[in-house]
Image (cartoon, rainbow, N blue to C red; front, side):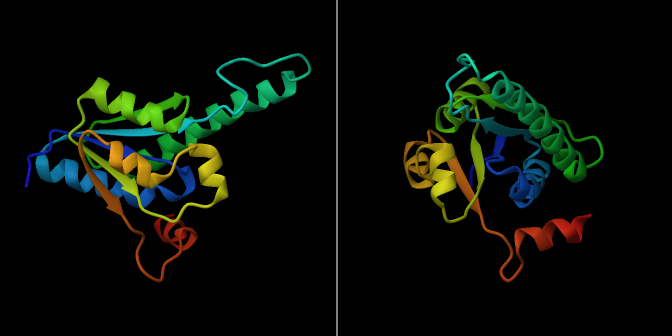
Length: 160
């Protein structure tokens, strides 16, 4: 097995990524690796191209970015172990492209993703399937499944 030096956890859906973050922390500890956690926010109206009459939507979008950053920081802090540095990143853009950019920019060796079945919402938000992302990855990938028989909501309640 490779020695992983830089690990990226993709926090695709904030509410359900705790298991993937936990796995990333464990692997980073085992290999003495740097850990990065990325969440990409997709703007369906285009990058900062809000038209007339959409000021309320633009304000709501900005609030959602701040809320996402707060939630991601809370999840990362809950999983952070003493002395471990974790770089949190919230990027605006098409998630598929942002993931690939971060892999290149940060020279990532391993990507950790939560494995789940995609629904229409995920396809709308991500624009491409997880399967396509996996095929185009320039590095190793680990897909993390949730514990059998435990829903994501139960997992979050257990940890609180």
